[in-house]
Image (cartoon, rainbow, N blue to C red; front, side):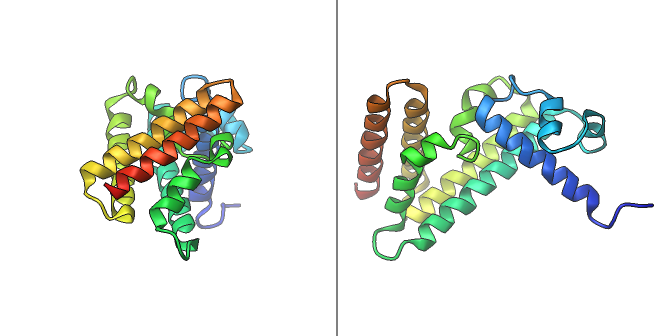
Length: 188
């Protein structure tokens, strides 16, 4: 009996969602294809009917995860009624909640150090998606792309460091300081 129309796309999307969660939490190198497939509720053998290799999955996962983050940040901005929308996005991005939900958080701080050692295909997709994120932040803040790049770099760096340290007080301080300086970039 044949699968219903759209089945293969649904399965592929389940694999990408599983990979996004795994990569956000454990990085690329520490996650195996069987682990991703198990997270999607599938067997390892089916992977190659959807992807040529793990690098293709990483590239598509970056595209998916960054789109997912942009959609989430747009929703956060749209829900704001009074403050400048960018301040609400900065507050969310540099919140203890976002810091602590690595499996659903922004993939950029989770993978940046590994992407620099990835294939050209993966780096190309990551570059395009990072540019899209910077454009989103720049447009939301109503600033030029150069300032938007500095703003997003401040946000990503602050989140990365806050997730890295094992001292909760220092981590919270990094988030607070990051918020303050990110908002100053928008004002100046």
